[in-house]
Length: 88
Image 1 (cartoon, one colour):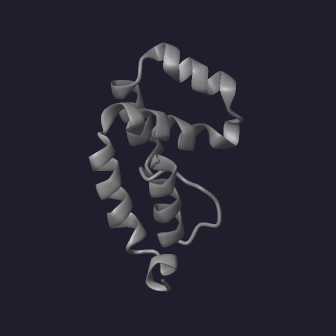
Image 2 (cartoon, rainbow, N blue to C red):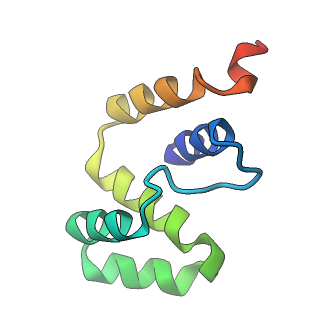
Image 3 (cartoon, one colour):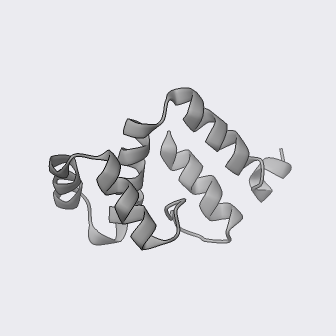
């Protein structure tokens, strides 16, 4: 579900591709390392292409850190700001 949050944040920011919600790569890396065990980070590195790593690491960390309700709140907050949401 966090990929929906990433999609809405990316769309709001004018990107045509999926980007992490946390834009500062240093902050993203620090947050991911504080949330995910090293073995999970290694798994993601082995499972995904380099251009998808930041998006996938953030999504894995969000799935571990946030409840479904918290992710839903983030989704509503970001998706209500996208042009797609205003065209419904």
